[in-house]
Amino acid sequence: MASPIDQFVVSPIAPLDILGIDISFTNSSLWMLISAVISVVFLSLAMRHKAMVPSRLQVCAEMLYEFLGSMVSDNVGSKGRQYFPLIFTLFTFVLMGNLLGLVPYAFTYTSHLIVTGVLALMIFFMVIGFGLYNHGLKFFSLFLPPNVPWWLVLFIIPIEIISFFVRPLTLSVRLFANMMAGHIILKVVVSFAVAAASMGAAWSVLGVFPVLINVGMMMFELLVAVIQAYVFAILSCVYLKDSVDLHH
Amino acid sequence: MELEAAKLIAGALVVLPAFGAALGLGMYFASYNNAIARNPETKKLLDEKFFLILAFIEALGIIPIGIGAAMLFG
Image 1 (tube, rainbow over the protein chains, first blue to last red):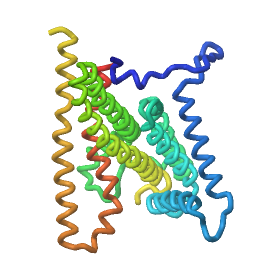
Image 2 (cartoon, rainbow over the protein chains, first blue to last red):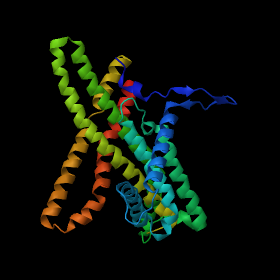
Image 3 (cartoon, chains in turn cyan, orange):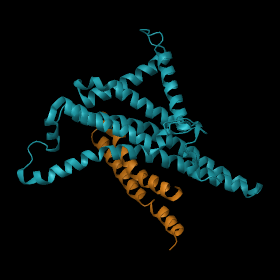
Image 4 (cartoon, helix red, strand yellow):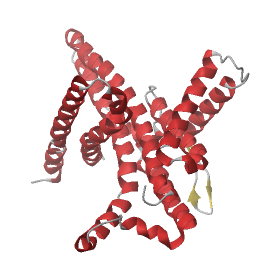
């Protein structure tokens, strides 16, 4: 019986390495391509007519746009409108990754730390980059919140620095662990049904219970998939807010 | 103790943090319901951050399980 970890193995489809670097087209990049194509096709189909009286499909696209627009304007303020395309693509990419992962035989690319780590580091270096660009060296005043009593300053600064550098870690591990643990639980529960079935015809009746448990787990996974994409996007907005205006 | 036994014990111990997450979720939902029972107008305010906080508590319960599973089956 395959161990629950086998579903996360990245297997190359079209091996390709240039200058010794293996950049083969793997099933992970295949599913990233599929999620990109689906979101592009969905949005372009939805916004084809741009009718004043929106069709049902167009309402879906507008709902997604307004949801993310209000999230960005609430959390990053009016100067944050420039980050809206980034947050929109980030949210759609992570959401499609999580949702497509629930399809059987699909590959969830967000269940790899490398993928979520790269996304989180991108946001992290973007915060530092824009912070330095917007505020110059005053950006480092971020580590000293206003009106802190003088004897506390010695403790506050290391704490603020640590909490600043732990952000990409928690951001990436939260999405990674949620997706991976969820899929492992699904696989383990279904292996009970397989074990019951392999124990002979009489016992396979018992196999229906793990399947029922999996129905519940799948609903829970759907909730986790959407919420984790939302949390990843909203936390990126909150972190980007630091680079826009230092102390809110 | 062989590595295999230690791995299995570690795999079992890793589920303990879910106890804390369960407590956290219970208290969070209880305070959410109490707040709305006391003052139903606050429902709109509370709902803004409801799912964000829910995800944080959930993440604290699932992260150890994810790491433990990676360790156990990895």
